[in-house]
Length: 47
Image (cartoon, rainbow, N blue to C red; front, side):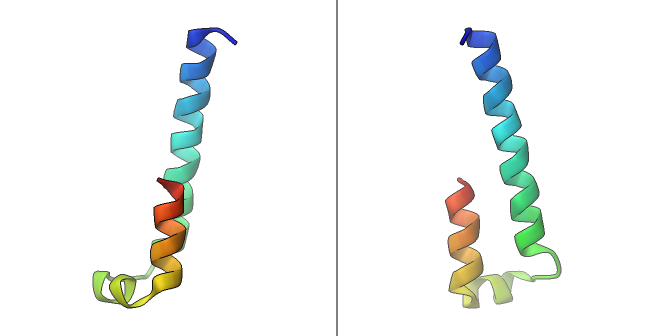
């Protein structure tokens, strides 16, 4: 795989991770986030 192809794949993975984090945190405020270890773990996993 060429560097450019890897770069495109990496950006695609980043976009997918951002979308998942948005799904996990929709309608969740910061206090709720801090109290919910499941959401925290899911978000951290995307990093």
